[in-house]
Image (cartoon, rainbow, N blue to C red; front, side, top):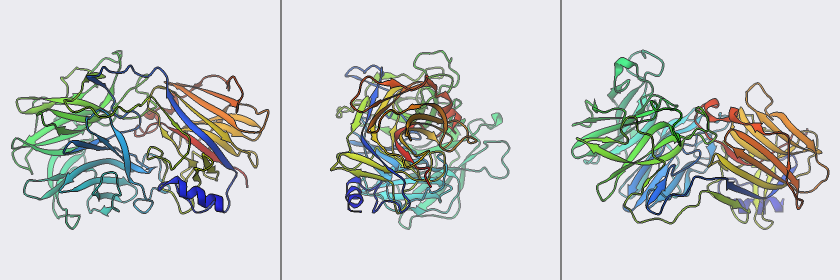
Length: 552
């Protein structure tokens, strides 16, 4: 018991524990986890930056400027901790400073699928207080949270009495507050994906919406074309005009960004003469450094008068397939006769361009990291669903190891697997670890899990007397995944494991600790079926230590 209490004190707020589970399986011990990009994108010159600015699973970005500081937040669905908060002073180099949802008392994701939970947060600031308004799908609907320090702690949610998704908070010059959001249209929807954008006043002192709401947009820019999924709206007041920035077309390859404006906050809003102001849907598929699914933008103004926007997009390795999901990109806006525009129609998203005219922030190395478990897990580490009273993820900083107490929840279940991981940032990258594990019986497993959702994952590790790779690409398959390769394990003791991801292919290697060379297990594995396009589009691959117990 003393050892587990000691470990709990070292692990930090998000994966703490007071004791091992009463019916715990064998414990897996991980000495380190290392990530290395292979053939990473070439570095930009000192005067340029490269997209994406937040690589990997970072969709639905929202941004706010406070003085010389910029803060951003992205969606996390049913991952915990949720709603990562990033800080930058140059819009290019971003550091994760915390997670807005980092306590199990704030929101409960128990039993939710990976594509449920926290959708599209929007961050803003007023008079010393940061605000996030957000939707929790199947876990409470819309809510608002606040913090004096964006690094946290953030308040418990105040739940709001309105439907729909993608709320965004706007503060008017007279001190009033308003929420703009996506909801069903008035009357019966005319077609699948027919949505509307609504505006409702918000009492930010009592933290509740006021009665009545105003319809801003019904359908989209051109209702005659049956536009789908008008969503992700934000309001801005610029030079006496109210601008409504919103996405349209769904979050796949038809995604786009559109603009409206009005002389009155409550409308009517007219679409701009040039829409969409950002999309890649009409470009040839054979273009170099192809970017797809652009949209869901938010914008900020700099002191030099320039405007910049963050938005989500994907980098497919083939067709619409990517393991990284939707990532966060940055582009300047240009203004043409009073209307903002990201790109001319037909123009591809540039992967390298001139930096904003801001004082450079400290560079962030996105090509590698190594975790030796010498202290609490950083905010980069996430797990599936909300921690329960007794947890299975523990850090013993004295021993320099991560301990996973295996349990009955497999990766393919809707339970709480013993798993913690970090996002994949590159098409070509290696994840490596060393694990010590003594199974109690047939089916006990410990190793690395590359997880897209509960029906799409690759698990590679140690079972009783063998090294095994399991993959799941369909909900009809075993919750543990089906065996795609295995070999006998000749000796006991620590084993090193490596998953080498190369676009839609993965190769897995193993060796007994201290031995060389690496041994490849089986043939190269086709992991294109794990791509986000097959798994609901919302998430990206998260990779890290995992343990499971099949023992009675």
